[in-house]
Structure formats: C-alpha cells, structure tokens
Image (cartoon, rainbow, N blue to C red; front, side, top):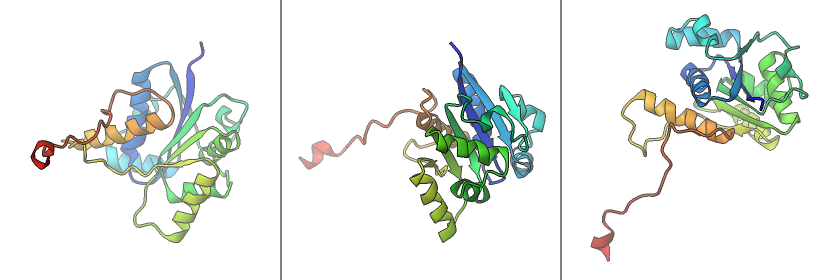
Length: 198
C-alpha cells in the first residue's frame, strides 16, 4: 500500500518548534510521506527560535518543496494529499487562505485542501486578536478548515516546555486522523472529595 501523504507548512509566526516536532512525530509514526514547505519568514523564525539549520529541518521531511514552486504536486487536487497542517500559521497566511489568495505554494496547497474538502489545520499564532484576524478565522472555518491555536493545556501538569509542545502536536495529529501515543487521553476528573460530600 502507498503511504499516506501529509503536507506540513511553516510560516513566520512564532512557534517554529510546533512544525518541527510535528514532522518528527509523523516520521516516528511511520507509513506516512511528509511534504514540507517553509516560507522565507518561516526559515528566519526557525533559526531565531530553535537554532536549527535549514538542512536539519528539511531532513525531517520526505519531500521538500520550495515555497515558490507553485507547480509542485501538492498544488494540485489530483495529487492524493490527505491533510495539511500549517504550524505555525501567521496572520498573513491566514488572511491569504481566507480570501483564496494562493500567492505561494503554502497558500495554494491550503486552497487545494479546502476545495477538495480535505482536512486543513491552521495553528494560528497571534495575540491579542483584532477583528480582521477573527473574521479570517471565521471565513476559513466556514470553508471547512480547522483553526487550532496552539494553546497549552495544563490539566496534565506538564513538567517541561517539551511536554507542552508534544501535547499540542499530538492534538494536531488527532485532528488529521493520525494515531498517536504522545499525549494521554483525558479520562475525567477524579473527585477525591466524593465520599466526604455524600
């Protein structure tokens, strides 16, 4: 059987570690072919926030596309990409997707996901949000995309930034239908005072 095809886009918003860790997790899962596209601002953010070089990041993907390669396979709905995650997703990229402005490979590939009714997850990174941001998020949601701000979850009592990142990336894997073992499932609150109140 052919491996599942997943696209990961990375743009210039803060949070480069999310895209990097997502690529690592997808590689560990196996039987998935990853396609990577990074914007110029994305490469700057990767260097600034992680210190990782371009070659090291590209090595995490199976196929690397230049952001200006608008003729790449992931720019066509005929190519069987199952899902796409943009992590992190800048407000500029969000705006382009919301308005169908496919000016580079990332926004074109995202447009393909929407028009083909395939899963698109945007890990949008900005705060506070202005009205334009909120309206663009609403527009993408109405078109079938999933807006997924990488908000940390504290109910698992994470002991490190790595655990916070892993949990967020694990939830993104859930959203694109990839089985994961990186985050425990919530089983409900155990009421330790149950016997005392009855």
